[in-house]
Image (cartoon, rainbow, N blue to C red; front, side, top):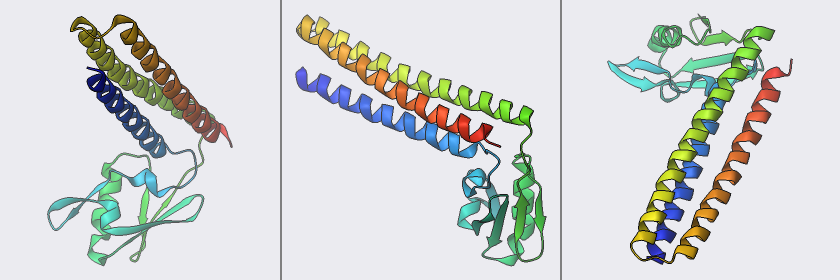
Length: 187
C-alpha cells in the first residue's frame, strides 16, 4: 500500500509539472509587444496538401524587437504562409516581398495591455484548475487506500504532503503570472 501511495504521489507531481509546463507554453503565445517566434506556434501551413507546422517549412527569426521575418524553404510557400497567418486571426498583418514574409508587431495600446493581462489571469486560473484536478485524484486514492487498511494517521500525513505540494505549485503559477503581467504592462 505504501508503494501504491508513493507511486500516486510521484505521478501527481509529474502531472503538476506538466500543468506548469503547459501554462508556460500558453504564456509564451501571449504577445507582450515584442516579436517572438513563439507567437506563431500552432500555425499550420498547407504543405503539398497536408497541414504542417509553420516552423517545419520555414525559418522564423526576429531581426529586431518589432519584426518577425519568415523565410520559407521553398519560395512557392510564400502565399500559403501568408494565408495561414491571416487565417490564424492573431491580429497580425503579414507582408510578402517575394523572398520573405515580414510581420510588423504593432505597439500595444493601454486597453490591449489590460486585455492581455486578463487573458493571462484566465490562463493562470486554468492552470490552477488542472492542479486541483490532479490533487483531487491523489486525495481520492489516498482515502481509498485508508479504507482498504492503510493507517489513518499516515494517510493524513500523505494528504498534508499533497496540500503542501499544491501550494508550492500555486506559488510557481503566481510567479509566472506576475512576471508576464510586468512584461505586458512595460511600455
